[in-house]
Image: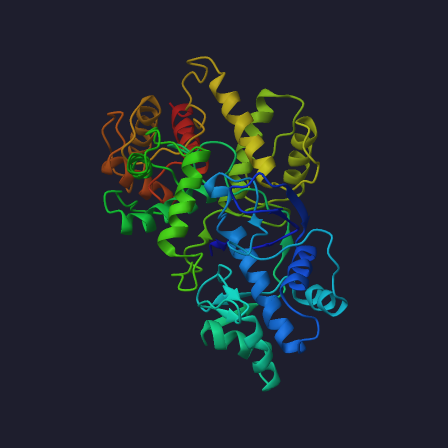
Length: 453
């Protein structure tokens, strides 16, 4: 089953103390303290508790929507939200926090409103309902509803519709920027690629000049590159086909726009859209292709660096794998946890790529080359495709189910079909693309045949 990336409550939020374009100061405060401050600035502690709770749910969800959509970072700002009520909600630095409001916020600060069937925090627009009105919650209106016996949930339904839900006890964590830190390009794979593909395909519905990506599988193939290039052309960015920080956030901005995620009438983001093919974190007890990938990378790195520890490629995150990860983390100055998080994975990937690229030509002799460090997929050309076809053709001489393919250096449908059949026979997830686990298994079979000559 694929994992799902759900919103996390941030530990902190950065507030700009003025309108977006002003030269005002930014302050970073704990998220729960921010909610207490806004609630104490926006509503009155003497209101009925049901009204207070309804308003606090709206305040929390509004702020989380700004963070989830990266509304301001995607526009080049270095803050999450402003304290200008023209754009966001009131925050007054160093103001008094009302005791009863503080108690309620401590209880529900990690609960938020969603539209049923969607995962993103709803853009819970609100206004005071007297001097200003809006398409959303009326703060003073919640008081009369509470006095009529409405529960907080019914009050929210009155303003936002009966199809809302409340996510309770969402996890709290450190939320950094969504940009992965390095440009994404052909051959890359991972959850960030899958997110990129889903967002580009949705934008393409409104901008049909952008070609859709056939498979949103987390593998950055030539069709993803073509979609990126066209997006960059349409929105006047450098047409590199790579997703750097500016392209990443421009995609994020337009995805939010076409989905209307920062509006009450948002299209919404479904569970399927936020499902991702890879685990965010690998740890003891886990198994499968991602674990085999880590084991393969660590084994190759350790082969060329005697200070590190090789690990069996059994697909199980066992004690030997934990020890190998810890030794790697210690050697490269990472927190020694034995857990492969994003930081550790990025470092493993970088060191592997540097190791393979530094090897002299012909180092492999008669054996298969090491995995080149990027996915091979349909439409690609080059020496690594030639090598892959050579290995598959040799294997096909001994395994009838695998079709014999010409060695052309071009990854076409014949190569894709042969790869898919190989994956099926060897119990690897069938994608038709060659990542580290598929390459390792093909290389292993090829080397065995060469040794038997």
